[in-house]
Amino acid sequence: MSRIRSRAGTAALAALALTGAACVGTAAALPADVQGAAAGTCSVDYKVQNQWDSGFTTAVTVTNNGAAVTNWNLTWSFAGNQKVTSGWNSDISQSGAAVTAKSLSYNGSLATGASTSFGFNGSYSGTNALPTTFKLNGVTCDGATDPTDPTDPTDPTDPTDPTDPSGRVDNPYAGAKVYVNPEWSQKAAAEPGGSRISNQPTGVWLDRIAAIEGVDGGMGLRDHLDAALAQKGSGEEVVQLVVYDLPGRDCAALASNGELGPNDIDKYKSDFIDPIKTILADPKYAGLRIVTTIEIDSLPNLVTNVSGRPTATPNCDVMKANGNYQKGVGYALDKLGDVPNVYNYIDAGHHGWLGWDDNFGASAELFKTTASGNGAKLSDVHGFIVNTANYSALKENNFTVDDSVNGVSVRQSAWVDWNRYTDELSYAQAMRTKLVSLGFDSHLGMLIDTSRNGWGGAARPAGPGAKTTVDTYVDGGRYDRRIHLGNWCNQSGAGLGERPKADPAAGIDAYVWMKPPGESDGSSTAIDNDEGKGFDRMCDPTYTGNPRNNNHLSGALPNAPVSGHWFSAQFQELMKNAYPAL
Image (cartoon, rainbow, N blue to C red):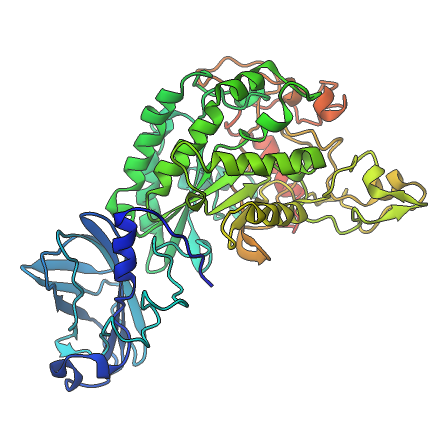
């Protein structure tokens, strides 16, 4: 099933008008000169996936119904002034109106009944008329469809049309590879045993303006997108980006403070979001599925860490008062949502932050108002992500909130502490239901970051705890071995969680490793840096806590570097305690 998203504007209407023009269907709908030519030789599926005022992206699949070939070329002519500007998975060229797409070294062989796909970007003015005649190795194919044919499965008048007018698919991760960041992969592979996971996809963090072009000679955004195109091959490829540089960023956590001051909203827009949009909108990258996770650890702070709450901080009061978190997130959703192959996911905290009654509903309402203002629309949101860079267990199998011990509810245990949820899967699914009830798309997708919530190793309980008291029952059976749910920095005993995968559970688009394992959450002691990042005592293993973790020890590993920097000891800890085990 496809998530149908209506988007206002002429570009979206134009794309909708062409969605039904896939060249797949019955020969009876073809012009007479095509119907009688070499019937059964080949068929072509030509789909305009995205279209804007002066350009378009097309996907082409050719099926060989004749004798096997070792090389192929597909030719057609444009009826208008279309020009091919770039392509992938074929050597594509144009002379006048005539276009030729030739096979490459890896996709030339086509057995009888076999198919291959390629794509291209083009420019046009006026009408982007569809080609009707194709030739494979000089022989006319028999598979172009009349767009007015009511049997056409992508007829735009057909209410069962599975194609989103924007060109987006329901779940960008389904049937796609996910980009492996070569910089992270190299660091992981250099660690003892790291080659076991160095081929896993992780998020690319755009955590400061300089990261767009690349920091200290490292890869910038274009470099990553170019590398993703190289990894893509003939299939689909997802690139995961973390957009993370709000003014007054992370008002409740010093370790991840950012470079922009609380009032630098105009700079955030002009120097951060606008350049990112320009790059993502480059037609060169139209064949990628680009997932953007928008501003981790921002909006929930405006619910839980402001005046009137025991965990209030002056910085969060400032950000609530000036509205720049909502303005920044709304602007990012609006601008990035205009790019047809971008999929926006908003951060929705985690169950140990927003799972309580007084946080859950208020956060969902804030997400809605933020996604409905400052230019943003609910349709700019493809989904939400939970547990980003956190440690909350995916699924606690040894107890539920409905259990009781000697008449005492599990919710009254010190660990659960009246929370409605015990793990991230139940929280993500419940948050999704709540958001849909508020007006978000009924096919809203959720992502769960499982990069550090495996909690395996020798400390992982094999079954429920003893039913002596509700606390012995919960503490003896919980997989999450943190001292307290409020502990978030470089946690001792943590392990890699479920490997990234698509469609793992109802309502969940994917398990992802958005936080690259091995990157520090913050330094154990104060370290001077030019990244605007402070020292948070929650990263100090000797710290005895604050109201956010009910005055417990921090549970952090010692000798950690500044947030985002490589932390070998943490990487080894995560591999040692991985669940499923490596």
